[in-house]
Length: 212
Image 1: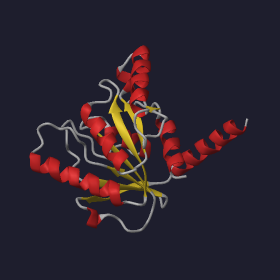
Image 2: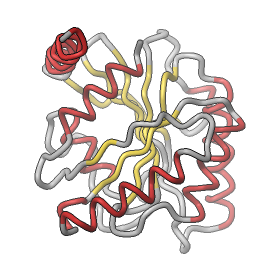
Image 3: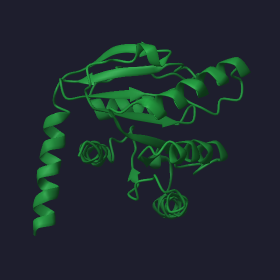
Image 4: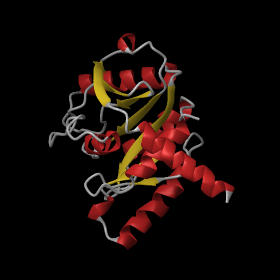
């Protein structure tokens, strides 16, 4: 009974939090440009074309706030969105785009490493995994980087509407096996579809939990 009451309170808190207006604040290309007002942050990372912008728009409840594109690798900076006066949601650069230049990839990697190591306001990274492909090699590299940085992170499956129910169950099981191998990974996997608005409430509640 107490667990159910706690979950209900958490859901109400999450709904109230994300009813606040969301707005784009700034794009950051190096750590010197990070906001300094000490609001808590949660960040969203993932391979290029994983559906990150669409999911962020669904999470924040504002269509078109995070720009979506058919061109992989469009996000090249840390994009900051403020939710009321409560927190920042950070859109991290996509990784794994083969056509990106070596210089661009190097700059992205340096930015991500510096951000993960030194940002005390960052409460959790939500790592998006395309459910059609599962955890890929460069997803594992990112997970290892966050393990080394002692950064709490949680896996989020995207585009699950593209799969049949039994396929979703299989990818959840395979993803859970990967999560169990990583010490900094939060054990619960969030299952979403931005297009069908599925799992958005659960993702909002996961954000609330990460804030402690």
